[in-house]
Length: 402
Image (cartoon, rainbow, N blue to C red; front, side):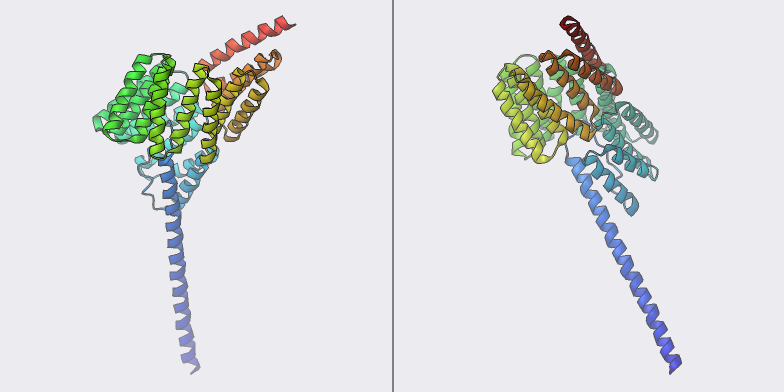
């Protein structure tokens, strides 16, 4: 009997062990599924969020490995919460584990996007050069078009518009070859932006209208609204302000129709810019404050910083320099918080302008110099030249004051 009892207990022990194993395996499987679902939700958020750069994600949504999915989930969350250094570190970690060229391209794209957002343009240039090489070697044409387009954006920020144009045109050729209409619209829009930077407004208008035509063809309402806004910006620069208002209001209506708050905020800001150009300062202030309200609603910090900066500019024009300083310093605080160097540099320059208005030339000079250092750091050549002019003027005023 004792022997039989021992056998029974032994069998029960094995059964319990097997049961525990299956429970643990089921829990592990459940946890893995949860992590993968959370990762896929983050992918959707990245795809839905507006961005000036193109996001190539092919290969990533199919990730089944729990460790990879968890790191990617955390990286995408960090990117969304403006912790770009953390995001880059996570994406780099997965890059070391990448199984194929498509996955490597997607990860490099995310690293480059995080570098663009933190104004680390020189680093982004190297990242996209690496992505271009991998895409060319593996003959992944869509990834190559994305990389060429994104490095074009980098060169525009670095003050090299002709180089930017060269890369956007290469991206357009590939998109035309593979029949990617969305990619063609994005490339045409980017080419328009470069021509606008170069002052070639007729050419900019031509490319925005071509992009708009494709967006209408594929019924991309977000793209239609974006290009209507771009056309409005050109008309504002051309001095056709009522026409500019017409386009921005159309763009706003489409964004309202599709419930896209980011687009609404962009167009409210653009309408504010037109009223500022018209000299209708109270109207401009009204639209910038509406912009700020929407940006706070969606939690887009860079948008809030831009709105604060624009409100500061209006208050300076209204002859309220102290109020202007208050808003420019709020913008600077946010740009410091999110590590947006280009934003910080612009804020410093704006603060310098206010101090110059106040005839506090020593403070103005200090802020202009700090802005210049930051623009040099990110490689924004055109803004360095503007700061140089501001510094010369502030020094002259300071010498005359003495």
